[in-house]
Image (tube, rainbow, N blue to C red; front, side, top):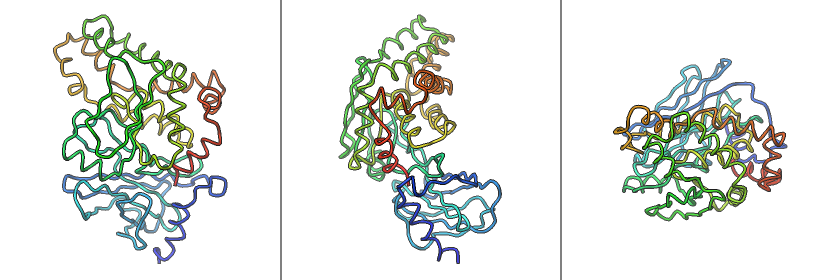
Length: 357
């Protein structure tokens, strides 16, 4: 039977943290995902390329690192989806461990955390690495600052077990305020070189900064983040080496600039592909609606509206350009982390132990 053998697959996946003994290249390209309705019911999806016959055993849990011995459901792999009527409330987050024909294992869940008072809150885990490992779900979150938490938000934050909020203080123009995130401990890391976002938005509003100017500003901003903020980045990375700080959220004003750069360094250190790093970065576009972040923009003249939209938009070239620039200057991103951020291979190994299944 499929599930009699499953523990021989599941236990190594969840317990194996030594990359030297468990690393392997994946033969199958497996994509997974999950969506949740307002009712709390889930739809779990998967695709396996090249095709695989047999069954997928699916284990549901509210803990991304612990699953029941017996599968919640078994489906033909070719079906590519399954529904789950979960127990508990809408505020209980569920994860799904999928075992494909006794051969391949994946963990999946919903990426976006549906809150009202947070901007751009989502799980940064779940991605596969170049060695066939998978980032842990439910340990590393990313987002913008909390503006006004609702009672519903408090229930959701409680359900994901968030312990620490690592705040990348961004600018002397915006004071980072939280209205209390339950028992979450906030740890602030001040910028070496602050970015005056308020001035930028004022210049967009009065027409002094055009759409083309915004694109240039963002390019220069990422260069500043990489080369003029070593203490902030180094301190934040070393903070993430303490297992007691997890689950943790990395945040800034909107969760798309300093947060994006630090998340890139983390995912790169774990072996996540460049395409997945960029895809994760671009998710901010769907979660940062300009009409909510800057409603005054609809009163702007057309050219200024485009500049404002450009300011909040994430472009693949923004992150790709700074990654390429670092590689040109230092040979690779590892050397940059070693020399500029004092975060060496032993630190990166420790990070993998904490954030990979």
